[in-house]
Length: 444
Image (cartoon, rainbow, N blue to C red; front, side, top):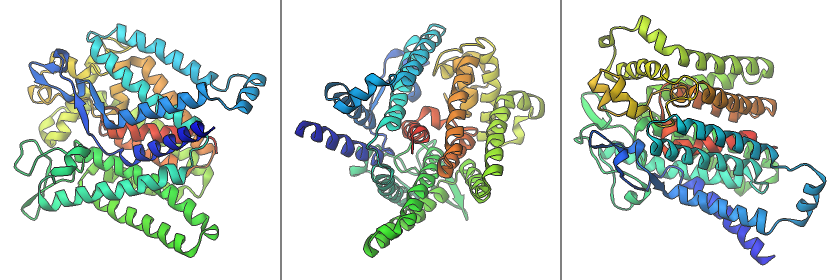
C-alpha cells in the first residue's frame, strides 16, 4: 500500500514538472547519414531525445506499474462485469499501427518515417494518459504549473528582446540557443529604425513561441475562471493569490505575444476573442465553430490551386509569404505521386529538392507551413481523414460539454496551423497539442 502511494506521488509530481517544463527544448541530437541532405544537417530529420520525452517515459512506467502490477481490486471486479474499458483505445492503437506500417512501407526513406511514427505514438500515449488519469485535477496538475511556467519563460523572452541577445549560462540547460541580433538567419524586427531581436525564449522560432503562449493563455483562462467560480470556498488570502497569479500570467503572456511580432498568431488571437464574445449563444457558437473548422480545412487543402491560379507572381509578396506559397505548390506535386497513403511521415523535406525548382526554398529545408497540407502530403488521403475525424471528435466533445476554453484552444491551433507547421514538427508545440486533445476527451 505504501509503495502504491509512492507511485501516485511520483506520478503527480512528474506530471506537474512535465507541464512546467513543456517550453524547454533541452535535447540530445543524433546525426546519422539519413538526417543530412546534400551534406547539411537537418534538425527535422535527426533522432532527438528531449528532457520532456524522459518525463513522459517516467509517467508511462509509473502508470504501467499502477494499472498492471498493482491494480485496484474494485476496478478489476468491475472490469470483469463490464466490457474492457480500454477496448476503444486498443482498437484505435491497432488501427493506427496498421496504417503506420502501410505508410512506412510506401516511404522511400524508412528511417525518417519510422522515427516520426515513434514520436506520433508517444504523443498519442500522452493524450490517452491524460484522458484516463482519474486523479488528474485540472487546477493543480495543469493550471498552476502551467501558470508558473508561462511567467518564468516569458521573463526569458522579454529580457532577450531588450538585451538583443540570448541570456546564456543556466538557461542553456532549458534549451535556450546562443545568438544575438548579428547572427545570420535570426528573426529581427525594426522599431523606429532600431533593430530588435524578436522574442524566442527557449523556442526555435518566435512564431512557435507565440502559438504556444496563445494556447497556454487560453488554457489558463479556464483555470482562472474555475478559481473565480469557487471563490466562496477559498479564504481571502487564497483568493488574492489566485487573482494575482492570473493577472501576472495575463500580463507576462501578453508581453510575449506582442514581442514575438507573430502576425499569424495576432490574427488567430483576434478570431479567438471574437469566438469568445459570441460563445454566450451556445447554438450559434456551435454552428459557427464547426463551419469555421470546415472552412479552414477546405481553404488549406485548396490553397495550392488558389496559389497557382491567383498568385503566380511571387515577387508581389514578402519573402516569407512567397516561400509558403512555393511550399504549398510543391506539396500538390508531391501529393499527386502517392495520393492514398502518402510519401511517408516526415518525408516532405527530403522530396523537396527533387520536386521544387526554387533553390531558395529548397535550401531552407522547411516543412509545409500548413498542418493539413502536410498531413495530406505525407500520409495521403487516408491519413488526413483519420486526423480530421479525431479533430472533429475533439471539437464535438468540447462543444457538447460546453468547455468553451478547449474549443477556443482548438480554434487557435487550427488557425495558426493554417499558417505554420510547428504543431506537427516542434517538440513544445506538439506536446501542448497532445495535452489539449487529452483534456478535450476527458470526462468531467
